[in-house]
Image (cartoon, rainbow, N blue to C red; front, top):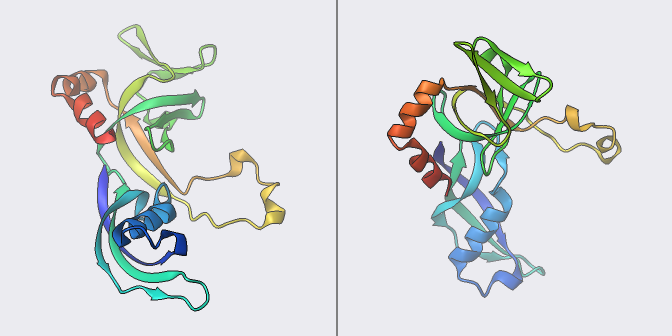
Length: 205
């Protein structure tokens, strides 16, 4: 679910942060720039893991800003294909089911990956699975286990101010999203028996 990735960047420490320990100032600046941001083909950045190297600081002429070249590692969210996630249903429509984690909500189950004999219940606004004559409802906020099937990347460039108002919410794309399929109920029961819930909730913090 989480990986480490190594990056290099120029960190600029403002004069008001100079009194902090240098390591703390560097980490704070990196977290401000990268935390909760998506890097294309890498994943969703969570926070700094450690600092590998840092150059001597150079003070900018007339600004008081200290410039430091830093090599560091970030904790990044990027589950691999086939990985099982414990997540929460956040919404549903005829186009599929939306799933979310505490820190990431661009997870989607399209209709073609739902179980056979599944349908969208318009009245209840939930997906329903019919198995041996019984109906099982995927209710909003219910916890489910899903398998990662694919990932999608969109290079989101800032729009000119003149175009921002014309872009509707439905047209906006996420820079990183994940396509998943629900696990059969019997597999979910097996994972309960081996303590999968505890393991995943521990990772989630």
